[in-house]
Every structure is written in C-alpha cells, then in structure tokens.
Image 1 (tube, rainbow, N blue to C red):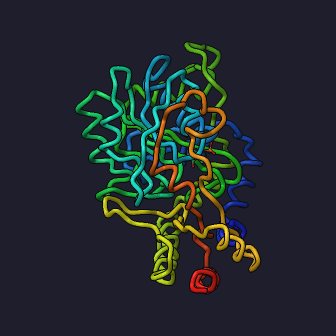
Image 2 (cartoon, rainbow, N blue to C red):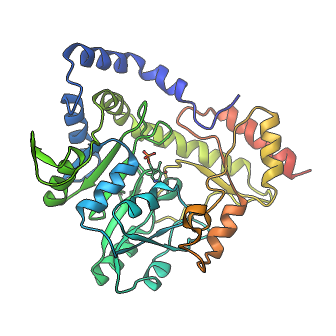
Image 3 (cartoon, rainbow, N blue to C red):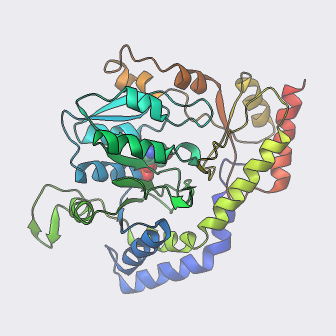
Length: 365
Ligand SMILES: *Cc1c(COP(=O)(O)O)cnc(C)c1O
C-alpha cells in the first residue's frame, strides 16, 4: 500500500530524538506551557521571520484566536476562499463574522486579488487567503489591496509551513496568521497543534491571553478566554521536525516535479507554479476529467488518492442557505475534476514512477 503520507518512515528517522525529548518531559512533568513550548515558539518565530509565534491547540484555534485578537467580530465580513477545508470558514463564524467567498484562479487554486477587490463592501474588515496545497496566494498584491482599503490580512497557513514569497515566509505578511500541525501537514505533530504568528505586540499579548483562559497573571482573568495551549509533548516533536523542515519541503518539491515530468502529455492538468512564491506541495493536485477511472485504477494497485475538496464551502449543507445565489464557476469546476496523489518527504522516486505509470496506463488507453 502506498499511503497519501508515510508518517512511519518519517518517524523512524527521528525516533531517538523524539523519544529522548518525551522521556525528559515525563521525568520533569512540566506538561503545560513548559520549556519545549517556549523553545519551539522562539525557534518557529526565528524560522518564520516574525516577532511573535504563539502555540495553541490546533490550526482551527490558531485562526480563531488570530481573528479574535485582531478585533474581527459580529457584523464584519471576511473575504476568503470556498475551495478550502471547512476550518477556514469555521474560524470566521466563531467570532460572529460572515465569510464572503470569492472565486479562485484556475491554475493556483488561490483566491485572486481581482476577485477580492470586487467583493469589498462597507462591512469588509479582513481578507483571509488560504495558501492552498502549499502554494502561497499572491501576497504582495493582496497586501496592497488590504492596505489601500484599510483591511486586516489574516493568512491561513495551515498547508504552507516553509513556503516563501520573494524569500519571505508565508505567515509573515499579514497582521496575523494561523498554522496547523495536524499530523499530515508539512510540519506535523503527533496529534493536534497550531500556531499564531504576528509582528504586533498587542495581538501577541491578546492571543496569549485568549489561549489561556483570558489570563495574563495566573488566577486573574481579564476576558473570557479558552483552553487552547500547545501541548508540551507535541512541542518536542515539532522542535525535532522544524530542524528538518527545509529538507522535508525540498523532498516534496522533488517528488512533485518528478510527477509532473512523468505525467506530461497526458489528458490532465499537472499543478501550476505561478512563480510568485515557492510551492511546498502540501498536496500534489491534478485536474482530470477521468478522475473516477484514474482513482479506481490506483486503488486496484494499492495506491491511495484523495479528493481535496469534493464540495466547496458555499455548497456545503452548513452554508447552503447563507450562500444561496453565490456562484463560483472556477471553484465549482475545479472541485469536480481535482484529485490528489500521495506526496510526503519520504515518497521514493520508484513509487512516483509506479504511480505515474498506473495513471499513464489508464489515460493512454
Ligand atoms: C488543516 C487545516 C486547517 C485546520 O487545522 P487543524 O489543525 O486541523 O485544526 C485550517 N485550514 C486549512 C486550509 C487546513 O488545511
């Protein structure tokens, strides 16, 4: 079986370091906001080139706390993508704001500056681009729009750890950003975890308060907060993997480029790199009219594949009523034809050849 992500192989390479770190934590019992969380926050801020990085319990929480700390709330509109995981829009709803879905570019699958600008109303308070599948959205252009209209820029970096735009990390452009450390993400832990980044001291202070019961000084509570801390054991895992993230992302890019080379000339569209940023291939996603046939053939050869995402958010049951009348033709057409192939830092060239060979067999028949 070739899985979408081979986490076992990755663990085998760093097992000693992680077990050593776990053992230390189990002995010192500093389980909540301990030394590894503090060290990871410092190391992540350095790597990402931001003033503050604040660990929290998940990527969903990171986006929620970032919006909350930036003062987004009831009555506000937040412009975002419908071609994403539900958590992007959930975070917007948690603060009482309304997600306004705009259409994507058919090549990069990211929301476009033109579509964002057209959707701005008197109620728009923020723009939340998603760096989908690891390819940065057009941050320079989106930031210029936000600056021009006085809007906050909150980045959904759940799939883009290590992706850059002109050598600057995603998560360092906006007022704030949220990262996810769900196990299959480019930087993943062994459960749930997340991170908020910001250059603003005020935003950082608020996120720290919100993640820890609205409290700055223990047992003194200033606002209603949450229990959303990054776990100490997860921070051990993240510190070990952060050291190797460039190597992991380079391996993903290598596998992606090999796929694209081997699949060239077939009736499908391989991922497009728009040249604005460096794509870190959280997913390797194709467009193919014969998706069902291809997925069935892969399954018969014990090769995983998946559809991210089959139903865009404006067509989900939870948003159907609220989005009646919303039409996003590019998003809808991409959702009907997209499929993702296995990709991770431990995917061998042999397996890429094998997978591409199966697809070639189906589509050249
Ligand atoms: C994974 C993901 C999230 C949520 O992260 P969790 O850590 O699973 O809560 C948010 N947005 C996008 C685009 C994601 O892929």
